[in-house]
Length: 290
Image (cartoon, one colour):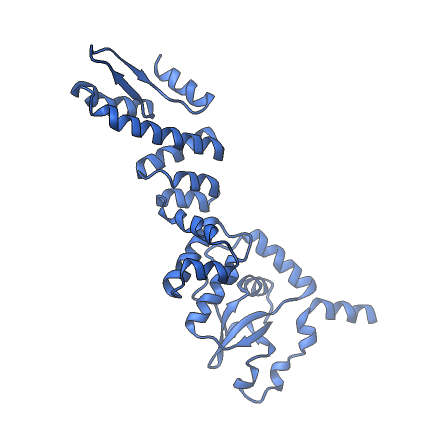
């Protein structure tokens, strides 16, 4: 009998220790600064929550843990009249609702809208499972809405200023590439390499090659390096090319899905250079030239 009682107390986690202490407070103001049991139905989600995706499998695992052990760490809420608003702990909140719990341990505090946003953003930035674009967007919101400089932001989130800057630069990428990074098709390393490509069409072209040929970050960096070198050479050479060649370059580039390089001497003789970036890319071009 004693074992069953012990197991039941363990299963309630922090709730077993609180023993519905919310009933001991005389008025609503007394709960501020305390951990109490709060009815889930009285809690509103945080409108400033930067996280837009909650992994169902991970949420299910947390729900199982809460069912077995209870909520170990309280969520944080702020008082809004007779209701509460979630400051942090949305995964615990969602998981508790998932298994049919009616209440959850919560630390009650005061916070204005700006503090709510900052706490939600900073807490989420510290998590390891955010994708690079989510982190970058959180950094940008802190800069725009909390009026922080990159230097102040780096101190607030405990990151080097260069790290913050690298994340923010990802937001300059084409939206399709940002989506690819969020979905895990390319890494932050790929994204950082592609930032150095100013033309959006070139970014998308390289992105397609990364997916098709499964290019590593290093291969992508080399591809970007070659593109910039070829673009620079083409700009200087194209000024000297005859009109009939200039008119054909775009057609050939489109056919090969690759930027070619054409040089010509004073006698009208020239050569065409076709770069490739992997064995698969070489085979593709070879088949097109058959």
